[in-house]
Image (cartoon, rainbow, N blue to C red; front, side, top):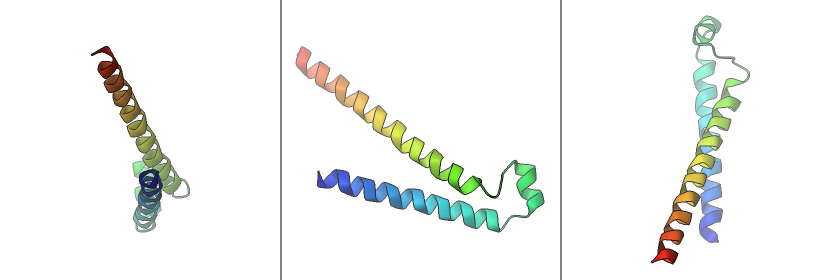
Length: 77
């Protein structure tokens, strides 16, 4: 399961990078710009990281379903 380990490491790096990128963007915006966009300076980086984790989870679920469908098709054949 070395592949799973690398997958987890990669995803952790991606999520962390998203958080850093969003934090950088938020630091370079004024309070007025943030308010106009409906962004909370304190929670936006964490929200972006949670959205990225949710995207990974959705992709995992999609992959699992397609694998199950493939296995069912192979069993039926």
